[in-house]
Length: 194
Image 1 (cartoon, one colour):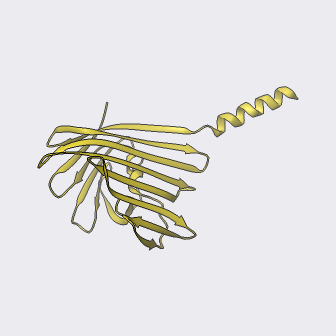
Image 2 (tube, rainbow, N blue to C red):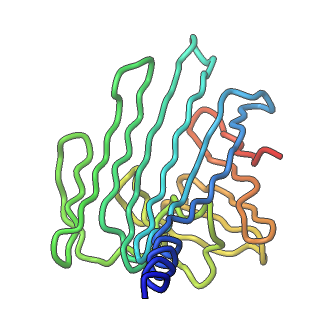
Image 3 (cartoon, one colour):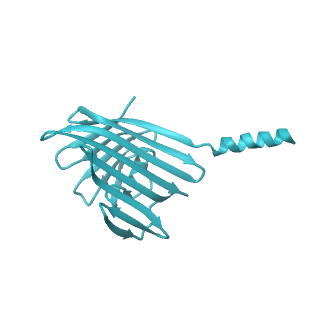
């Protein structure tokens, strides 16, 4: 009996362990490396925790160091909470928090809170880990809004906010290998590291 309890305890311990996937990316502007991005997904039971951390130095009208931190939690494939923070030269420049409250979400961006009454089952951080097949809109944790996404082909998708900015995402074997993020003054190329 004691052997069975030990074996059962070992088996339950193995099942309860988290499964973690991590990808490393190079950030480039005009083909020049400006920083790094690390994204992780941890699965533990019915909960998924996604994180993204980056640091880059942009030389445009002087030098600006940008650090970002994002943490997003899903339970049963529904977003439960997220926080996104952007620092410029060591000063918090932008912060967005999303918290599920009942059937709604409280979205607080830089101190101003709004309510969203739609379920969030696919957000932008998930683009690093899975093809957005059968998805027509993606929730941006950074901006606190939905964006439209369309497939250009089997491995290329475009995300847009009503046409103002169009970001492209390219996949190989279901993993994001490259993305082009459209900014007003420049584009950022995100490339997976070998």
